[in-house]
Image 1 (spheres, rainbow, N blue to C red):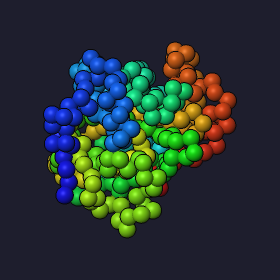
Image 2: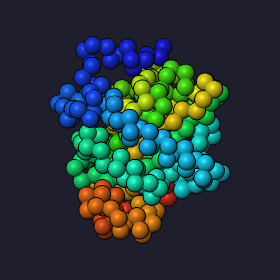
Image 3: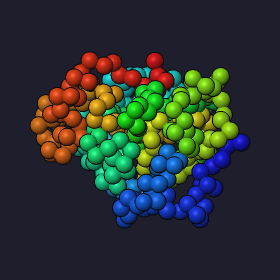
Image 4: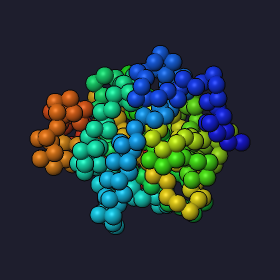
Length: 281
Ligand SMILES: O=C(O)CCC(=O)C(=O)O
């Protein structure tokens, strides 16, 4: 049976839905991230930011057409965009949004970096969702967690339009769904659905098992994924190679650091790796 996260977050857990632009990271949020593997920040985007992100992303889908997502991987039943940091100032603002980034740092450390910034639009009228996965196939190592994703809801996530499913606590299991499940596409007895309004950002320990579900409605379901990793791991998309020189020249020292633009260790780690997804080939 699928639980809807709405129900899960009735009164006792209401703090986990903190209004991000009015609250700082709380101990309860940190605890929830540690224990459950995710925190829901409702209204993390104000109306203006939500509108700007949506508008630019829809414009990019139009501009890029068939080429959309070519910097990453294609996904059957979804349209994707990649390398968004290069494609708009609004994206460079979003990846450094404090309440979100503070929680990301709680998972992967103060000196973490952006690993990739993509958009994903789940195609409508489809019966199949994503397999359960962990991002980059990542299992925590001897230093702990090394991947953290943030899902930016640019449409309302409803039970039928392909909300993300999550298995709370699974980031602590040290396994990947494909290693222990005979069918990672199948429903999992512990899964919950992320049902929340547009404007929400979910910070997710990306070792936690998760995946998009089938969008059975007649409209696409849009989200942006700002994915971060620990400083000693490769970026999923090597920002220094992907960002145009004029973009690199325009960003603040703080953003240069978040993008690892002046980081010899990152050059060594990221310049030669081929992009890795949790499940896309
Ligand atoms: O968009 C979603 O609901 C989740 C997508 C996801 O987990 C992925 O593409 O790796």
